[in-house]
Image (cartoon, rainbow, N blue to C red; front, side):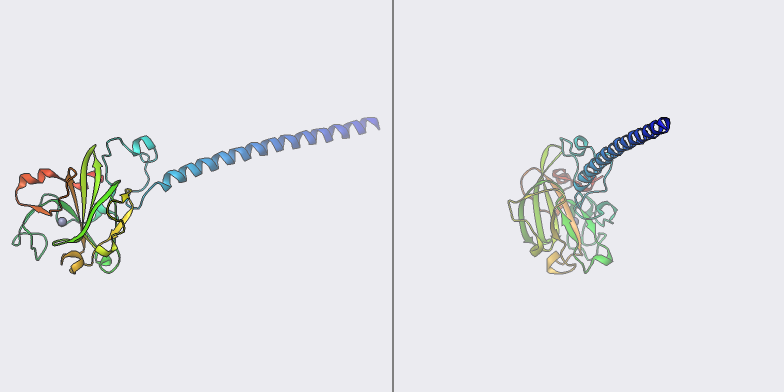
Length: 238
Ligand SMILES: [Zn+2]
């Protein structure tokens, strides 16, 4: 009888021991889950840094030191899928009323920016335009040839530049002059095609990058060498 009782007692102890072990394991699992959750939260935090005008997250962008190079060599896309849009006028293209990819053409000279076209589906909806870089809004106005135009200060490869956003719907321009903008922040929508909002032009974004801090919104220069004062913004969105 004593033996049976002893055996029972030992079994109870063993079961108790097992239960303790299981509890221990469960705690470890809980700790492990918490770690995974933290890792997921960290990943979400990295993802949430993406801004509307930027491309999908990549390995490089997940690494903060590489994501923000000291030289600021990149521009955010100022319009969704900028690089997959057709451009009728590339940077530096020479046009005249008798020789142009668009018709009618009222300008002459070398194109100082790059044009991002809209699709037929986008003609009657708002097409948002985003800040291509961090920097203050320097100017917004209605100008002949553009309709609404906005100019932003920016640093590119360590040098000061200004960004020109042309053919915006002027009344949709959100920031006030002097306001600091963050790359990817919405600044306006495109003006309606062939209306005063675009100065009669088709619905598209004219995107210019002018060297230095001075404001110059010329869409064309008359001498090819003057293009040296401008940069092809599309080259910085790769
Ligand atoms: Zn243009």
